[in-house]
Image (cartoon, rainbow, N blue to C red; front, side, top):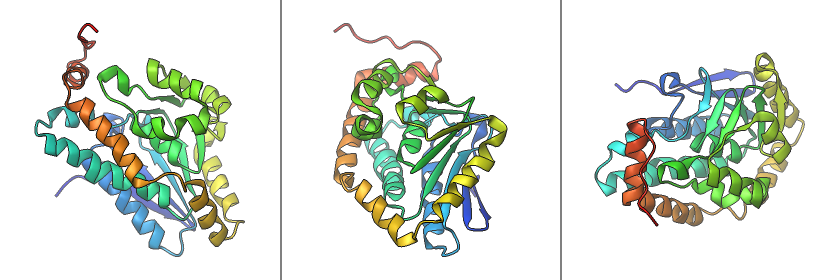
Length: 257
């Protein structure tokens, strides 16, 4: 039986979904993507749940996709399955979720972890949290950041994050509009729950329609197209070199342009 990659905890009308692979900084493997989907599906059908908080166990929110797992996939069909059958359905579940989702970012949120935060309705970050979208450094792209990053934090901000891969602090993310509130590390859980409780003053039907309208331009076919571009580059020579270099803990050797 596979090891659980998440925990699901109800605290009254608030449901906590915790990414629980701390030994690999909550890297998103197929099982973790699947469990996030299943946990959100469970919370969606639970009438008692009014809001969901997503956080990470240990020192990280999430370091992004599990690069070692992706690098181990030799069959192109397996690579496509990883992204199209596991990541994309979970992304769409977050986007279409009819209740508020709060990200409680407790540490680094890199790559897909940062993109999950981008998709949440409210982002509360600890002072020690950092954010980055460094996919290009290993021969990949961040599909969600390329789609919505410009609208979220401005073209120049998201371009700098994607093209340099440089991490930013929680306060810098707050100034850009990526984070709603920055709090002391020890206050993260309390502040996230307070934010969740504040959303409960709004009518559930209003929340559902507001979220629907906010994401009316976020379509599955567009994220699938962006993911197809990601798959193409991951399967390319540069993508393979970048992922090998990451696993081997060295700088990639790009071909001369």
